[in-house]
Length: 216
Image 1: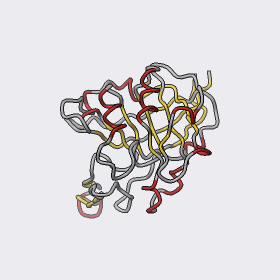
Image 2 (image 1 turned 90 degrees about the vertical axis):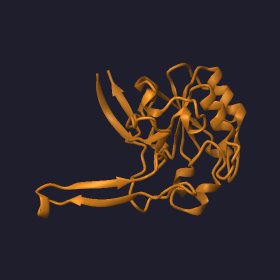
Image 3 (image 1 turned 45 degrees about the vertical axis):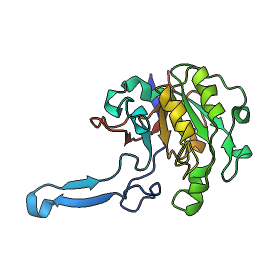
Image 4 (image 1 turned 120 degrees about the horizontal axis):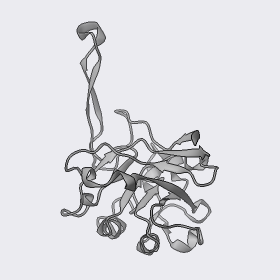
């Protein structure tokens, strides 16, 4: 078995990256340089929800699991792309009938493809489609516990009820937001990795999200 191809699903993090309204922008500070210290070291300050990231249940449930308490197996699995691009527009709520009847089960990672990542860095990005609660239940009923989307949130930006977040977190599910380049997953059964840094007690963490084409 070998990895034939890797598709990077991650936005590059920089001090200029677009962040969710109200979240802190990253700050990179040169702590040491080769010229002065013989090595280079950068101090990085940023929010846990910066760029392509995963939410732990603790993000919306105070008693939920923190990111370091979630088993690594949850972040790796067969990816199933749920393509709703032709059926969504600004502010659309995504319903399960939009993606038909894909084969999904426990251990799979659902990747909701809205096409909205093309607006990343613009105001239009925050007019994104979001998951209706019924879509969350549809996935959970099939045993899916990891859901990703190429938009800033599974809920509408500015919606303080966070209904989709609460339904998913209540089931112990993991959410990955700000994915990009889902269009490039043009091969079946990708092996998807959304592994985060296990920050102690944190509500989430940035990830280097990838989809791998495996050749047996």
